[in-house]
Image (cartoon, rainbow, N blue to C red):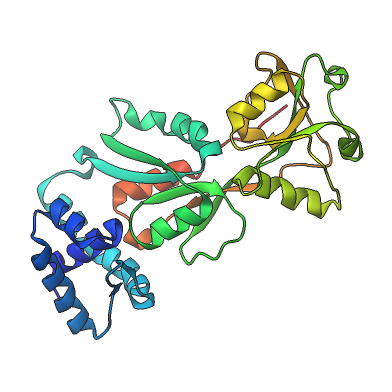
Length: 294
């Protein structure tokens, strides 16, 4: 086993395509296939399903070890040839769409001149997509609401979000600071469409309180939902992080019974598989979301 085989394995796992991996590595597809076959023969197992390329269970087990070995190799090169502070950090982060603005805001200090140069690629992914992409080595970190999907790498809770109401200023209840949960079924409510992350979080919380809501409108994206609120069609029940306070045409109301209980989590490989620079970024991200105060 040599380092190039491991790099090739990780690149194929990232792209799920032999030709695309070859293009990134500047190798021919037969050369990529030969390296993977040689590695599989040495390990005594099949690492990829073919022809539709995806990791086998053995490949998923081997992935974090390959990441650790390549990470140690890269770390040793940095130690020998340059200071770690001068190195370029290249990070791909999968972020739930609702949390993307906050992730961007808190990552902004890493683009300042006094910080190491950071090249960040941010992808909009659901929790399930983040978990799959991490297991296949296609992203380095993930930020999403935690809903209990099994995941074998570390998960750190950053903060707990809560559900809140967006209410038009023309709505009679807008004069109140809060709305009791028991009054929600009496109010015309707009909800995110079934199948969205936000709707799944809402349904889980309502089920915990044994509450059923018949929405007057269900919409697939947050911007259209906010416009519907501003037009006075109804009130919207949404995660707090999806909203900013008192936007044009509407304001936010608390629901006291729905105290912060939506875990916003950082997903990442085991620390042993991270370079020192990436470990610093993980440590910074663990504190990026201060609790909201009304």
